[in-house]
Amino acid sequence: MKYLSILSFTIFATLFSCANQNKKETLSNTLMQTNDTNKLDTAVFGAGCFWCVETIFQRLQGVEKVTSGYAGGTVQNPSYEAVCNGTTGHAEVTQVVYNSAKISFEELCQVFFSIHNPTQLNRQGHDMGTQYRSAIFYMNDLQKKTAEAVKNELDSSKIFDDKIVTEITRFHSFYPAEDYHQNYFNLNKNKNPYCQAVIIPKLEKFMKTYKGKMKTEE
Image 1 (cartoon, rainbow, N blue to C red):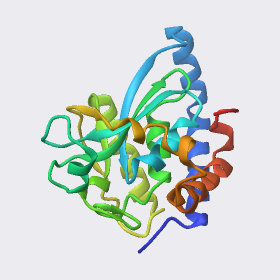
Image 2 (cartoon, rainbow, N blue to C red; image 1 turned 135 degrees about the vertical axis):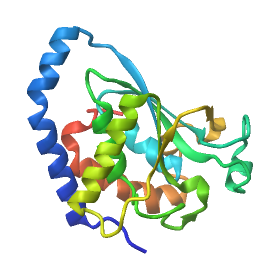
Image 3 (cartoon, one colour; image 1 turned 90 degrees about the vertical axis):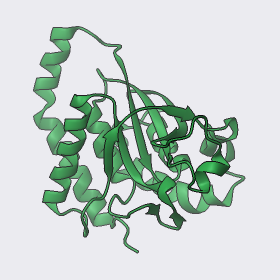
């Protein structure tokens, strides 16, 4: 089983920083032209257990709301148990509502690829099944092109040992997960061993690498 090494994580963050610096002037000009400082957009990502993914995106500057749920399946209003059984076709996902004047969809994609191993098919670590697949559910053609461009750039740069298997597919529907899944880490970090063993180490690594992108308080 292969995981992102600290070196790969650092290289990814460096590429992320350089790319954003090159685009800073263009982004600034665009914002001045639109004069829109509160434009909310939505993105949907699947990167393994939604508790982990929710925890990361909640802490990013520009992210207004994060909801754990299910997408990509064929059954309406699926339950957690049904999704875990693999009978609905859904993936565990997070729906991210963000201010595109503060953080772009491209930046969200770069964060997405850095917080899980997108070369693992239908699993993340010990979490196995199609519900844990790596996926980006795009809302429009621009999101599709952006997600594909980020994925192709990462494959070309050989940051990962293996080829990225992330599914990039059109968004159709999102079903919020049960209430007890929402804001899970913040409410259970001292109660659930999974939070201690899996989420906290991932969060600490992310906060150290992307500290300039984090909210000052959660």
